[in-house]
Figure 1: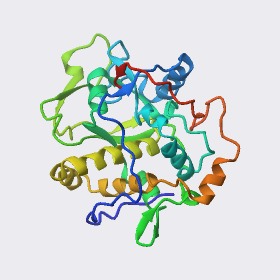
Figure 2: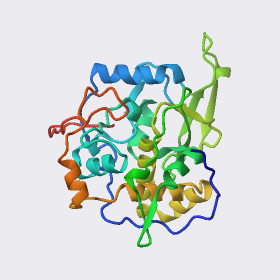
Figure 3: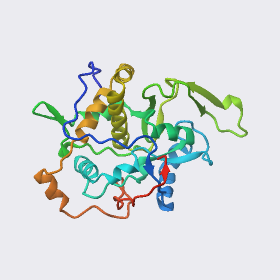
Figure 4: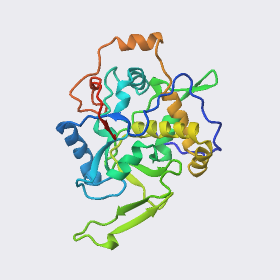
Length: 295
């Protein structure tokens, strides 16, 4: 399915119908680690696209490059959210595992921290966003997600295209050093320094699936709307398609708890498996811990 954005002026901000989920404050997540098998899956998915380099900086994979979740693993503690996303995304109950390779990318330590602080996000291309947006339905004047209309978007051989965008001005004093060439030995001509608002960064290609990217961008933008409406308006002025991302997020975040069809669906067999799929079967809830880490 191929559609184009008509660039109509942004409509009013969508209100959350029901509960909208947000990640805990930046960095306040429980400590855990990926298994060797999960890391191997990420390595394999990224190898032919980015050769396991850091996604934004394009730097070689060394001790300063980390595995980074697009959607925080902390969401796995929210059973209502996880089940609702599985419903809207037309997945079996229990099959959404946020340790899937399609939700994990490589990031330099600094950008990993800023990701956890909601300072930046990835923006999919308009065509991909519109494939999800055009499948929303309007019920009593409210845009809702309809699971039967959820588009199945497969990973292209060369990955999905994204743009790096800052959210708010928390990165105004930062710069991003990106490596353009990798022929040895490294030299200064192989690097470019990019400054806020980072619109000189080239488009990025990644194995990350856009449903995770759109949810996370929508969540971050929703937080920005609540925290700093002027910054949110400025972001929409620069990227009008953010209005549609926000609406998709609001629709996907609508809680279905208590709905008869939803509750009956949850009683069916789960989609648990060995995890070697796009969804990669949901893990048990993490035990409570006291350590603090960035994810």
